[in-house]
Image (cartoon, rainbow, N blue to C red):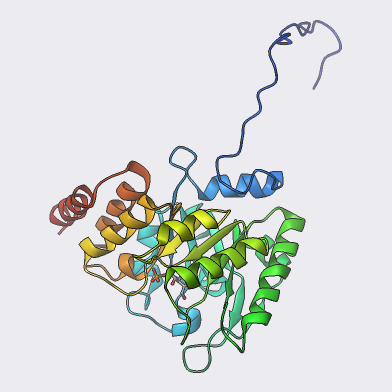
Length: 294
Ligand code: R5P
């Protein structure tokens, strides 16, 4: 309880010293609200400016993907090595321990599967995202899909509006689907559309030709998906190339959880993303961990 008597008078006013003003460390988010900046600071490492997100939301369009049959057995032990997890609310509630204390990129849309047309999506309730303590709201945007472009852009816009109301940032996810390209022209357009419509972060794919222009023309940070399983060294090369050319991180799934040593792979990816490791150094990290943990 505050006392009325015997208090020490305040005297350290810092006269002459301007109040410290920190610029925000992530591009394009300087003018975001306090809540959005605070949540982004949980997802991205402030020292490196980068993030390693662990994606295991594949089941919502693909069913029990290889490596995700028993998330409690295969993914939960990996969570501690990631900076953020990305999953659906169903898996979160059913399997992920609330004690894991990791930032959550919540799959905020739900829709059609690989059995039909993909990308016909609806949104969850913002109250549900708040109940689940979401750090980031992930929404698919199917730029170039004649059937779903408009509706998915509307989904992104609504998500940005709802998230902004409560200080929760939005991750625009460029879609997969038949006929949707993966070259710099397409990815540059798709990522820019996400950012222009208010996404705080954009997730896309890496392309060997012209990725620098994709990353540079997107005014907010880009994280890349890993895509289909590659040999470990190739996946590390992908991460290295993406970071070298301007990505702010990875949101990787299959190249982690389908590896023969998922923890080793995750640690190796972290070396690239946060510590500037070369591909050789990162591959050595993966192999060393694997050899020591047979
Ligand atoms: C796909 O359904 C999801 O958006 C995945 O989170 C995304 O593709 C990243 O996973 P992966 O590295 O396996 O491509």
